[in-house]
Length: 134
Image (cartoon, one colour):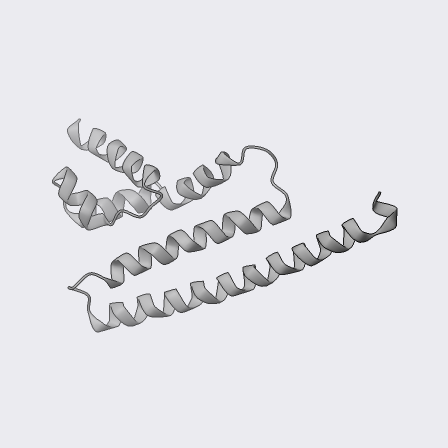
């Protein structure tokens, strides 16, 4: 019974902290192994719930630009999580390489999203300058 409650509490902490807490930190708080946290995270789809949580905060039907903002926030959260993992001292060289490549991919995605934001801003300005818009 206690494990079930620990599992629910761990998920609440993960969602409240926007996924920034590491498995090791959470495991230490609950007195379980970090692999247990990782398993709960995977089985209960915490990452999917986190994305839904972010989306639900904007409960109105989001426009395309809103989706870009949600994507940007999610990428920034992932970037923060990767950064937290890279700061750990016990990483293997292969893990450092993998995390660094993931970070590079996220940075590339952020650059693409920034370009889309600029595109939307240009289109929005053109629309407001159009005499037929009034």
